[in-house]
Length: 381
Length: 140
Image 1 (tube, rainbow over the protein chains, first blue to last red):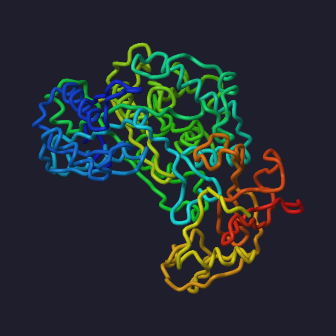
Image 2: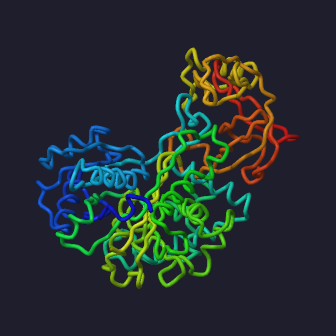
């Protein structure tokens, strides 16, 4: 058995209000999320001796974010740093925190993120590539990379836009049961099909939101967790995998490193796809979710389009996903809220959107230009 | 050719000048590693396969296939406002490298993944000709 299986506990989660929050900054949102997370855990600020952060897209200090957040919180950590993996950051920081508490380098690690992308005007529209940018040919924006993936998946496997729509409709349906979600009005496949093109084959309703908000997740050992407030939630398995190559990686568009990350997490946790009761799958665009089903072993290569049909991924279905609404409908916290929702599902505190009897949750993250992938398996303690 | 071209342009420097000089002469030219013969793009000072610094500029056939294909409707950069909807294709070149480019000469709904293409250069400033692609057999 892997020596770190179930050796980390997620003891506190905190999320601010989400949406357009004029007057907020990445720093004010990060601080508020931290305050809510220590309250959730029943910890005092001065017990936090590890601080891992992700700078918001509108955080002027960038990779020095850990200094700025630590200064605001009045913390002198034993363990700290800022990661820049876009939507892959949240899961990677959680794993870094797990390593730190198990190595005895910190007792309670807070992982913190705040961003004001909505009111701060960040548009996720940068041209892709290095040096001579692909923007010369008009290739730009996060939507471009995911449209490339969607287009090839459709061409190879006959995947349809309506199948992508199933994912958008499902996330919105789940968000309708989450009072903290930004987009709560249910939509239909026809609404999805009628929404304007962004980058064909992606419609507007295939795209995530752009949001202001903050999220914090606090990690310690299971022994310390027993003295805290919440039902025990354990980190059973974790995996990461990357490609730093884009053009030079023969299957970059298909994000094969996602499979490596999930398989490592399965192996560490001693579980497989059939054991997953609920999944929070990184959904910057609907097409990204398709690949998680294939790489997570829930269906065969090329079959994710039909897999999502027929209510399979809804509450009450075989594999409910993104039960709080995901990046698509809850809020675009770059995957941080996926961890929060995973923890809440394992605690059993999700009310009408609770997956009955759920004991194992897969949480995935992916970021940059499809480069960074990770998977975490949460288990009810 | 126009003097008021406002879209992104390459920043010419010692590392990329051979690529753009060749393009001006309607040749698609990329780096080939002298050690392992890997043809690479984007431009880099080192071979990502074998880490050799030694390379030569190598003329490509200019032929390939459409690996993936998308159409921009959203205006992310005001310089493209008059162009939307415009296409971007990921081209798999016969010699191995891939590059993003555009398919010219046909309506946006015509090119399909897997279609054979060949390079077609388009002069956009006095110094720069962009390698774009046309479907094999079509007129640009």
